[in-house]
Amino acid sequence: MGSLRARTAIAAAFGGILITIPVALVAITSANTSLMGIVAALLIGGTLGASAGWVAGERSASEIDALRVLVDQANAGDLSASAGLASMREVSDLARSVNQLIGQLDAIEYRSAQERRWMEAIFDGLQDGIILVDSDEHVSAANLRSGSLLGSPQDVQIGQRLMMLARDYELVSQFREVMRNAEPSSRTVHHSLSERSIDITVLPVETEGERFGLIVLRDVTELRRLELVRREFVANVSHELKTPLASIRALADTLEAGAIDDPEVSSDFLRRIVIEVERLNALVDDLLDLGRLESNRLPLDYRTYRPIELIEQSIARLQHQIDNAGLSIAIDAPGDLRPVTLDGPRIEQVLLNLIQNAVKFTPAGGSILLRASESDSRLIVDVIDSGVGIQEDELPRLFERFYKSDRGRHSSGTGLGLAIAKHIVLAHGGTIGAESRLGLGSTFTFEVPIDPTLRATQSASTPS
Image (cartoon, rainbow, N blue to C red; front, side, top):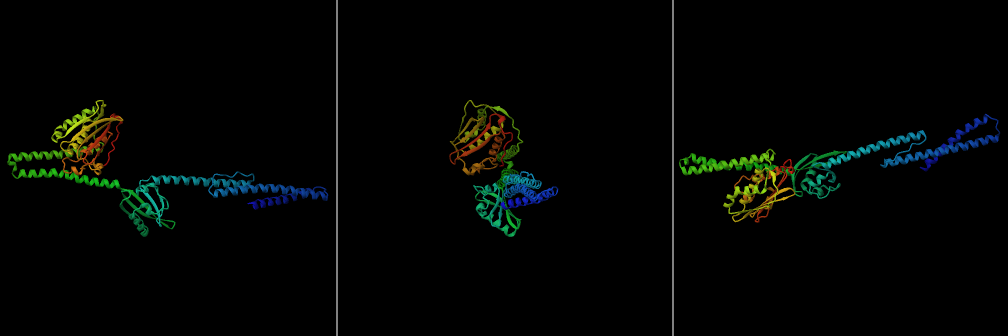
């Protein structure tokens, strides 16, 4: 850089001398000047020309040096600086060109960074896991979802081995097969580490002569669960319908074969047919109610009730059944509970289902307690029994349609009572749940808002 500055200054000074000499000669020829005057004129003119040329050359060299530094900074990625316009036209044009170039590069870099941020946001916002793996089985790119689907407690590290990330031999084998055959592959696996059912699709990707594998992970755990529930629902409905229909058919065939002529037998058979028909009718009514509740098509008639009245009416309707089972029942509720606005008959239906459930699974001599309280503007009702209890692994499925615990497989009922109770409570903007220990009884709890304006505008219907 120093040699460039010197060469520029010397060239400018020499140019100044060449320009000054003819000017001095013109001055000499136009006047009667002595030899000493001529020499003096040449020396003075040459010195002034050289000095002016040196100064101009030095300034031009400084401006060129500054532009060179600026270009080096831009080449290194620093686009924040700009070149000040120089006084000389040529240098000024060069400075403008450099500034325009830097401005264009800065705009391109900004757009590129913005697009990169958009792509990262989209990439990480996907519900599917996306992993790009090179031919050496190292992770080149991955989104956040991929780590959670594979049960990784930490973020995916770029460059880590696929086996260390997946910790699943089936996935790695599928990747290797795709890389070997260059053909897409899809399969569903149960990932033991994350306890999820995952659809895995691996696609070969060719880019700039290098082959990658694109792995797409889709969580289908809930879909598989819903498919199982649907199959169970069809099987259970078929069973619940087939049993009473088979009984009715058998009783009718017996009557047709001659039993109708025996007054005592025919009377008993007709009574049993009526019971089976009522069972079918109850099943159909429950299915219709459940369908309307799940689709939010069952209108609720909101009125104001005292909680203690709803509880006492429910107990009165089941008192005969409670006495026959040899059980005792009690109420624990403060007298100052505020009135609640809700659909009384529907909440009473919830109470009836919970009390019947307690009666069904509490041995003779046991007890049932209905406890009512208020908290955070919500009415809370507990139905506590001293029955046989429920296994812990069965608790999450209690409110599914047709689900019966192991101890209730041979009990009467459609298996829809708790499912209907759940959806009635949800329709009121409330919650319902159960706690139990095997052999120590169960507690079913539901709560609903006291003020109807606080209830959910839309029931959070969960698939069951």
